Length: 66
Image (cartoon, rainbow, N blue to C red; front, side, top):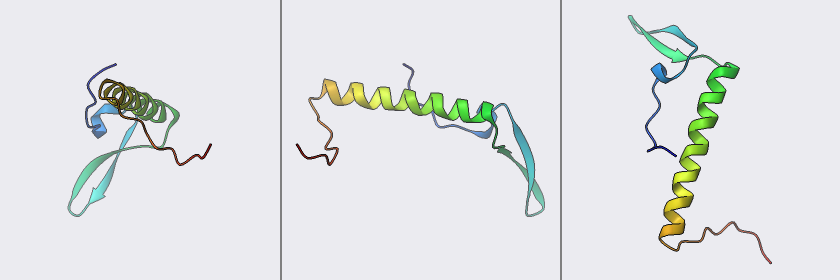
């Protein structure tokens, strides 16, 4: 588990350049490799939040009854 970091376009293996006014900006493409990066970072974030909740005795209200 790592400290969560904000993802940037440079964190993704597949990017493309798109017009942004008179400039070009780099944006991630919709590819399997990029999705795996996003999924891995999401799972890490969930693990960090769950560990913090457990350390602080917090229980999530899932909305389920019973």
